[in-house]
Image (tube, rainbow, N blue to C red; front, side, top):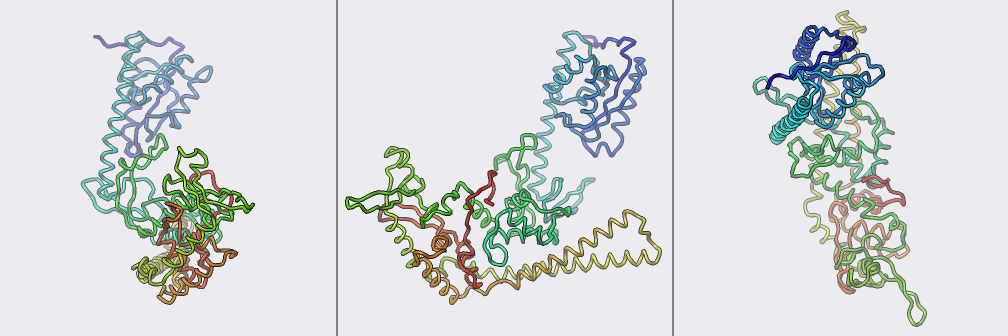
Length: 556
C-alpha cells in the first residue's frame, strides 16, 4: 500500500502552529529533543510552503491527559473564530495525545473549526482508510503508554522495597540524601531531619497525652496549639487540620513508607497488596503509632456517637450484645406496682425483632453495678495492674535517653548554623561578599531559621523531659487504684463514667449473668500517668463534644 499524503492546504490555509512536547523535565533540561523537533517541523513547513507562526512548547508533561498549560493555550487559540492558524504540526501523533478517546475528542473539535492536525512522521490523508489508520495509531500509542507506565511502576516498586526513595517531596521530618551511585544514577534514601522530626514527635505526644497532662487532643486542638506557639510547617506556614490528619495517619513515621499507596489519576487508595513497603528511619515507635491509630478509631463518630457523650447512662456507647455485636440501648418498662425500670436491650432485636437477634435485656442498675464491682475486684488491684502493664512502664528511661540524644543533636545543629552565619557576616564585613547578592541573602535567612528553630525545638524537648511525672511505682499504682475505686463508688460523681471508660473501652453482654470487659493497656497507662502527675485520672480519658466532623477524621 502506498504512502497516504495529506492534501495540500489552500492558499488561505498556509498558517501553521508548532506543538513541541517532551515527557519529562530531564528531557527538557537536556535541550536536545525539543530543538530537534523544531528543526524538523520548520523544514517540513518550508517544503510545503507553509508559514510558521506560534509555537507551543510543553517541557516535561505527559500526553495521557489534557492537564498541560501549553496544550490548553493551543486549544483555546484553535477554537477561536477565526482561528489564528489553520494547521497544527506535531512530530508524531503521540506528541499530541496518548489517549485514543481524548485524541478523537480534540481532533474533531478542531476539525469543526477548520483546523487540521498534521504529523510530520505519520502523514495521512482525509479518506476513510486514513481515518482508520489514525485511530489505530492513537490506540496503539495509548497501549504503549500504559505498558511503559506498568514497567516503570514495577521498577519503582522494587526500588522502594530496597529502601531507596523514588522522588517527590519527602514527608515532614525527613530529608533526602544520596546513599550510593550505580553507574550514572544516584540512589537516594531518607534520613531524619532533626529540626522537623521534633515537630512530628510533639504532634504524636499531643495526640496521645496532650499538653501538660490535660488529656489527648484532637486535630483542631493540636493545630491551634502549634500555631499559637509559632511552630510552623516546613515552608513556614501554619498547620491546618489536613496536615495534622496526614501526619497522624502516615505509617512512614514508624519506619514503613508505603509507596504506590494511591492512584494519582483516580485519587483513590489502592489495596495494601499493591503497596511497596520502603523501610525508613522511624521518628516514633511502632507502639506510639498504633496507640494513636487505636485512639483515633475509638474517637471516630461511628464508634462513639455524640449523643452517647452527654447521656446519663454509665455504659452508653461501650456496651454491646455479644450475640450480634449490636449496641445495647436504653429501654424503659413499668412493673405491676407502678415502678419504672430501665434496661440495657440489644438494639438489633429492638429494631428487627427476634429474627434479627435473640437479644439480651439486663436491668441498668444490675449491669452497671456488676461492671463496677468487677473493675474494683479484678482490674483495680495493684498486683493485677503490674501484671497487665508488664515492662511498659520501664520504657520511660529509654524514652528519656532518646529525647536527650535528640536535644544534643538539635543543639549541635543550632551551633553549626550559628557558626556558618557568623562566617558569612565576617565575609560581608571584610568585603569578601556583598549583601546585594540575592543568593547570599537567601542563605543567611535559611541559616537563621535553622538556628532559631533548632534552639526552640531543643528547649521544648528539654521542657517535656522536665514535665514528666514521677515513675509509676507500686505505691503510685496503689494510690491510683484506690482513688479510682472511690470515683467508681460515687454514683453522683462528676467523672464516674469517664473513669469507667478510662479502664474499659468495651463491655460485651453474653447473658444476664455473664459479660466480657475489654480495654487498652495504652489507655490505662496514660490514665495512670495523669494520676501519678497529681492530675485527675479523668484527664487521660477520651471525650467527645456533641458536634463531629463530616470528614473521616477525629472529632473536633
